[in-house]
Length: 250
Ligand code: BTN
Image: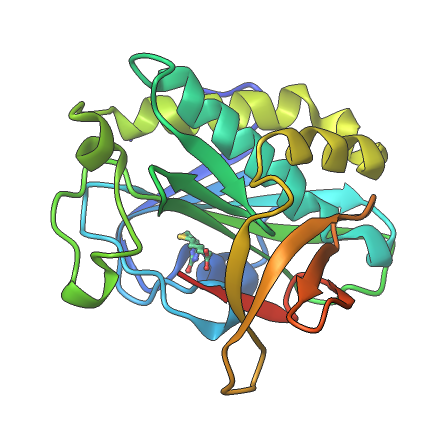
């Protein structure tokens, strides 16, 4: 894998690795390093889920980046990255007819199924200037999915009938990430942009509050200026949830 990028200090490629996020967290890598795996054997998703990805067909990588941001606003990095990944994917698609959307807080949805996800981690969220491990998984040229994922996951290939060069997508993501980096100083602007590409208010959703069994139904009411979701529950009350608190059921 050859990535030339003036913004990066190091590119580390593994044919096989447990998880690029784990590797990045466990090694003292300089900021602006990208760790890429051809095959991830223990890919990790948000909320302790696994991230399944067929070997050598997709993109699985982590960008190590030092970012100056107030701890309470650190989740904005996820929204920012979601916009970047969304734009990079849109940019390489053959035309504009594909229905690609952002799903709160940071999934990328193509024709109703998840095509990419983001897991941002940090060792210790309490300091103002710290290293983040921004893990991105994109299903690019994968054709087959395990039975339990068929209904909810897809790939760029499956939805568009085109093969893509994963390196080109990665290059686009990194270019955009650095190009618009200063936006991270304006969380409300990020949320405003993000809102334009997500499900509008009024959509019915099923969700579960973390650790609870019960599946609840609600209608999306909106998103506040810092990215919390507002849901109108079945008794008509508006509930506010932050990312990490609830998971949607597809
Ligand atoms: C999610 O939607 O749950 C987040 C998925 C994040 C997956 C990526 S793949 C590269 C990086 N390494 C990991 O172990 N996870 C992230």
